[in-house]
Length: 414
Image (cartoon, rainbow, N blue to C red; front, side):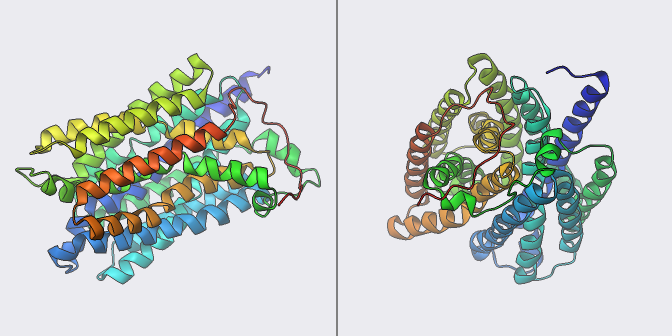
């Protein structure tokens, strides 16, 4: 595909803006996990209730991501990817500013729910735009850059939370989002979408994913291959203080530091996975490799008796590298479906994975109640989710270099 200098500049600008957008998205997505203990203690939650209250608030945020993924995904296919980017950023920016004024757990949870709705639109719309705008053999580089830069947003969140109050940390996230809106003014809708929008093709029809059996299971497998990612981030790392205590850590582990080092590792892993996928010309092989690395590093973590904060931070970095197949996972979802439902899929899939933390948390707590052991429960969930992910990966076709300029026919097959 020949591109003049103007179109190349537009693509570069698109990648930069999508990367910075995901940077702010990650900041706002993870700021609660980083300030969880400090903020909940400040509003009067007893120490004994910090873990479960934190799960409740995080699950509300994930529920917002679930709802927002559906809403923004459908809107992205019906009205354009650019409109979704503007609307989602504005909503989560205002919600984060409101978060600085909460004084009780229920209000906290409600505002995080609204923020979750807003956060749901950023990644899917950005990845869809990049995937549709770049050459089919090179789009992996674009999504790799978006993920690698975006994931570093956790460093900003950790640094801000460390030097400012937790309330001001939320304000900073909101201001960053509003500033990002100004950058969005310079990017354009993908030509692939514009061409499809001019036709009478049915667009953003969520029922198309459920009315056809083959399409439905392809969609479900896209979701299931990402579930280990959020179990590792949302439970194994976010609850590192509690897991560290069970491992006999001499000092209380800092969830904020652990998550920061993990996301640096994820960023490095995404770069490595992106290049490896380009070399192997396969995203499936890369995801298989990284799932096995994650299984190994997390098993080592759960068996590390007396782990110190410093060693935990380095281990979190290593775990993060293994979890760094996020960009490949989202790109596979984008490549599996036609232009008329691509934004719906690419927006809902990562957010359904994030929202899967809700049933994962419930099942994790169920095993804790049955086994009376947080480590045993973590092992059970780790192996269960990995097996499910690998099975689903085996059911998906390789889509590297697939031409994305096609539409899904509304064929019913139950």
